[in-house]
Length: 169
Image (cartoon, rainbow, N blue to C red):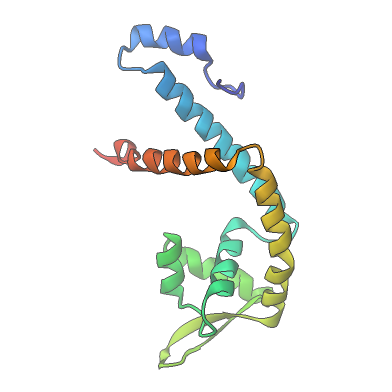
């Protein structure tokens, strides 16, 4: 079922398919529903992270540090793990440092490099936040059975494998 947020409904897609025979109505409906749901999930996460004055990007860096060794992580390690540019990481780290949630310090084996570590305030924030975060995430997924969650993960992996069709020239 296609949500009604201005997206074409089944009837409109069926009409388009008459004009464009390559249009597979179930594929388009599934994709549009996925995109609409993804937007809703992002909005929900944005609202959740806002409770803690964080963005998804900042939370991602904090959780990476929380689960990393006491040596912390380098900016390039963050970029590699997150799949974003070092410039993006630098901007996020600047904000987290201003909020006294992380600090930059010399890398233990090479003082020319920097490592990022959580401050006490950052560790306290993430420790306070995680129980609520995990409960809300569990509740968001609670309409799916354990089997459906496993199937969902497999289906998302299949969808991910097809994304090159949108990128390839």
